[in-house]
Image (cartoon, rainbow, N blue to C red; front, side, top):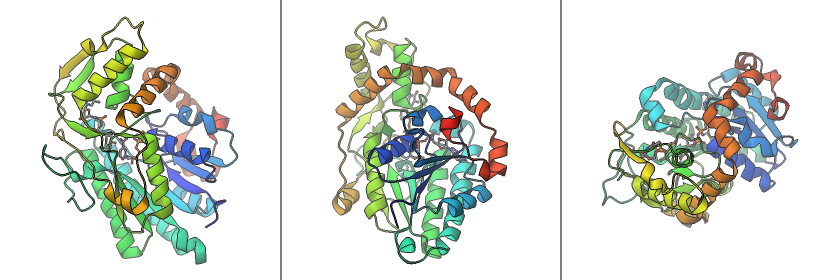
Length: 374
Ligand code: NAD
Ligand code: DAU
């Protein structure tokens, strides 16, 4: 398919999606149509740098809206779908799982059905090269003991949180659409991402934002839970690689081999802040650490074996945890206005004033570019 045809991405205003869109444009890979509901996690400011680019189209709407999704595919004739949209935060899934089931399961089903119908209209090289890339998580595999080998593509699914269960369900749907309907889909399961534009409810940006304001740094339980951290741009490069060269029907695990306990992560972050903000009155920042009640059902350890992606497709993480974390802290320090807009909720007032979600989902023709709205 021609690179002049767009890719259709879902959830591209969120953390990973907005990094992916910026990466895509920085490489000149062609037009993008971005379907996003602008939930609390979708801050249009994330994509301010590409607003006005004629190759970018923003469609405000819900992936559960079958009419809208079908209309977008028909109208834009995408060469691929990259599916990021999800409710993504484990703690929120424990407090209120409904939205997770709706968006992550029903929404994926809706996108798959629309993609299947659209794919049936393609012929020749367009049909040959069309891909549906489903962006998923290592949490579908459950939890590891300290001596267990890392998750690999054959590890049985064993999701523990409502979030993980909803993502596991979506993965199974994608797999079924490949096997039953021949949809050319690929699944990626990635470990914990960190980097610019991550919403400060997740561990790393929350700790940075709180430390800078002298607020407590809440560590769940004993802080010995292990996550395998990957800088978000390395994830974006992996997705692009899989889109280009991944085999249809396959799953690829994505991870950077950076296992760290939460306590280690927070200790490193505090040391970085001590160094980069020497005038801070909250130094040493580690004094702000507060042990709090553990997350219910908290998975103890995640670790990813990414050898399939590395050997088969030649991808390698470019950032170490140390270089990536330093870049991340520097980004948050340089973008305090972004953090302020998010933590104060100002961006949501702006979204409410500029978008009428009812009108958009009922009338797909009323697409608005984020530029117009900004
Ligand atoms: P995020 O929460 O930052 O962003 C989600 C985006 O999806 C937001 O822009 C939101 O507005 C949009 N969205 C939510 N519901 C929608 C709906 N019904 N219709 C249309 N848009 C909707 O999430 P993220 O951290 O960028 O994660 C993106 C994807 O990557 C998710 O599928 C997640 O499961 C997966 N993932 C995330 C991580 C991580 O560490 N963050 C790791 C592995 C996989
Ligand atoms: O593994 C991939 C997953 O990583 C993604 O699929 C999810 O979308 C993403 O949110 C992330 O899930 P986690 O639950 O691992 O991320 P979170 O940042 O919420 O927490 C990381 C670890 O830090 C986890 O062990 C819980 C702990 N934690 C988190 C917060 C927010 C704390 O100790 N204190 C906190 O305040």
